[in-house]
Image (cartoon, rainbow, N blue to C red; front, side):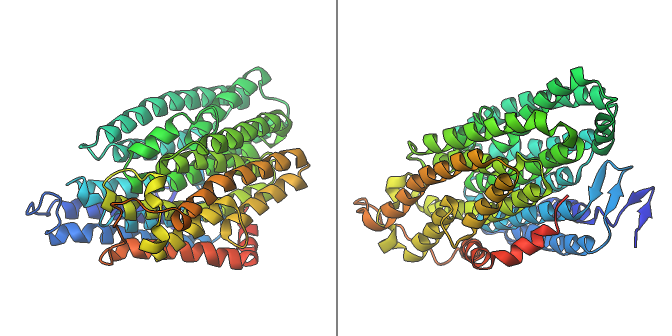
Length: 491
């Protein structure tokens, strides 16, 4: 059943529509909030805002599942599509959004009175990310990219009392605008080469040999720069550590999963839908980028003492692992990337949640030395952090291991064994700085003034931590279930 209004399939865009409506409801409800407390602690309306946002995300997840059960449908004259791959990307983005809201309930009122604006922008960013994952036209990809990017620039600097947050926002904005210019220029050149901005039309033109090859390679290179910035590929990663460290921690967590999913989804569509005939031209550059990204990300993470900067460089390395599976240009690689990002959302946002639990007591960025003795002072928190660190390092039977396994398997099946060998060496390197965190928590002596524990009153944060940890374990224990599901979510 397709519901057409003004030529637009309303059914297919129902998830994005509901999320935008939820954002508007949060914004309008916030207008009635009182000012009895500087951050709205005593205002009942302020306390309902995150739960309104979470209810909107829950309704969107239900609608996304319903739309997934319907036949695939093209939108806006084939400028976007609601297919299985779009559903998988939507699921990852909505999961990241829901977890971020749970992490933010008691965190956001500490640094801003703009509680309604925070959740409104968060939902609008998620809607933009979902639109980008469904886009099959370069213009729509760019519009969706700017929608969620503008929201993230504001969210990064929403803590106006923090000079570090404001600096991170400015850096992110300036470098993001620079990367957007590269993307637009690349899209223009690709339009000149393929005669269309539609990805399928570009593929047909290039496959027939009718395209302008003099514009093709420069266009591809500039597009890769734009995508590389958003996913944090080396050498376009410079913004990542400063922005992750300066942004409010829930925003850093959201960026680490949501932005990667949206950008990789669009990147995958460009590679596999628009440029499959050019796979020999782009495979080797992507392989080189993967090696540089994995290696530099891991080697730099080894030297970090700030947990947020360590996770930032870690996220760069994980972008390299995902790229390994995409180099062969196969549908299996795209499905592996989707699974990887699904597991990554739980384990990385979970790690940031632990930092939030400590940050609320420590009032600032968390240094690794502050984790010393956490196993004795807050054993449940230390256990969950251990689960996240082991999963991020790729140790079985946790979810992170199978994320890497499917990505590396796609590369091996495509004949890129040497690339997988380098990726495995990098995984071994990463195990050092992940396990160092665990050793610090259980075997190092705590600081003399370290008395912080996880407050029992912050139930939303506890729920977020519990859901993330349980998902990492369950996905790892039943990988075949998720693998079978993802096999049907390819392009």
